[in-house]
Image (cartoon, rainbow, N blue to C red; front, side, top):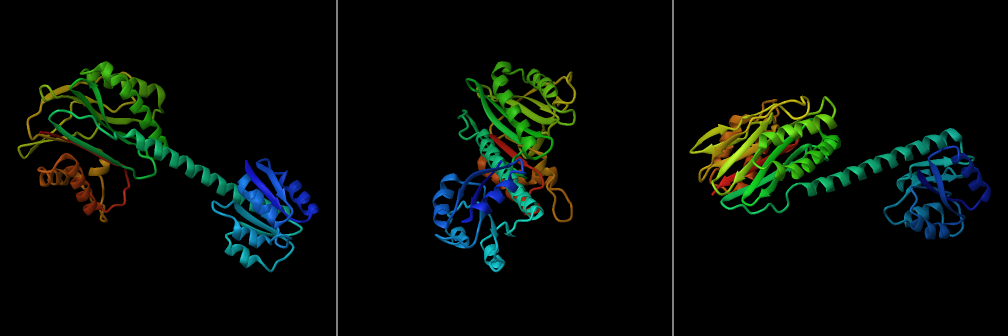
Length: 361
């Protein structure tokens, strides 16, 4: 509903305007005033979306009322018999300037502008709320793990990201490290990301080191609750601090890179993406990590970032960037890679990008 307030010193004018507005099903008259002073008292208390203001009134003109209203100010449509104040009205950012007697068509057009403005504001508010909620989903104070230095970051291309990473303690000395990329962008991808996070945090401790079975369970859940066209790529691993082992499954995600002794291994064992095929099976693998080994998890927003000529950053440049910052702590290496990607492709993001770095001390 568009909450509306009428200000006019002529009772008949207010009644006519009230009647015309009653023809719109989404306009609600929340109050009226017959002079400028009364309007300035009531409008801040009622906080309407829209105010119809006469110009010539006792207790302050409509222009004076508009100037005096404190932000956030309601949308204003001037409704007057005078045609000489239109420029001043629009300088005050009025939505419209209607001459009495009010024409129904002009009124309809003015209300439609307000309707769209209210809808846009509501949509922006919902997106802002989604951003705030999502920002709290990413790890804020990751648990300390003996012998492991790790850090992650996600940068959204739009207001809400479809990328996801997390650090989940599943048992004493065992930490789950995961990264995922939800197909699509924006709010819908963000909702699917939230669903994945909730399920991972619920089932990760249950499945423990059986990461392949966990991927299969998540796949069936995602298939049952998402559209056929939607899917998720995910890499999920459990690090055991007691023997420095990493047990992992790769569900169609960009293979993370394990850098050791100047060379790279790609962690590819697993299966297909999550969602489309309910009976898909997932293999898992366990590797032994050594001191100074560095694991880099990333989404395709890193490797597929393009420069002005359409050339991609690519895995070769990513490997070169990793080698150039290998001596840095995890968080600094993470930022080093992002800086190199920015230098290549610029800071405008055409896709979400996420990177996680884990270094064995």
